Length: 187
Image (cartoon, rainbow, N blue to C red; front, top):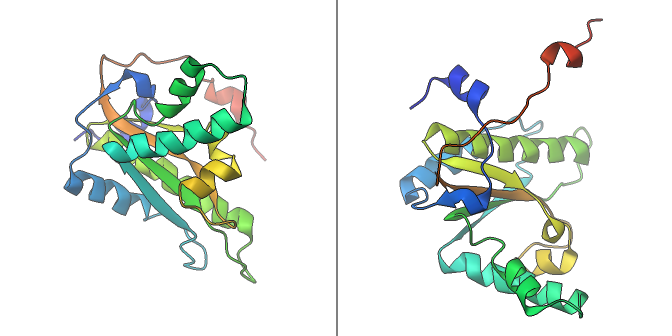
């Protein structure tokens, strides 16, 4: 297990198409999701939940995505529809992070959404800490109400994103990072 600071300094996203299996075991996934649930949550509302896509579940979700895509893009080619069908199939495990903000007198919806975003990032970090690679993505399907309904979200829920988890097919390369001094002002 890597040192926490070294992990945070060197973590990087890996494209799902560059991931291979196996994905996390049930015990490892339980650890990842437990860490994902241990985030700041003003008011102890727990406004988020997780959808795990593994095995054939990734393909069933892909069928939902492909059907919606085909219906909304009648000129789409069979190849384009197949790309959408395989959207969640590249990584061995995908976790959808769902936000269902609730009315609260002291905790606005925005804070609840930030809590769900912190949950998604914690899932990424936990996966990396266990030796996996991860990538938090959205894409058109994360915002399409018909896809979301097909994946089991209610009308008052949104998808923070899909966290793809697997193993790196090759050593990930880093990308240019911002110069921290350019991002900081002091008051």
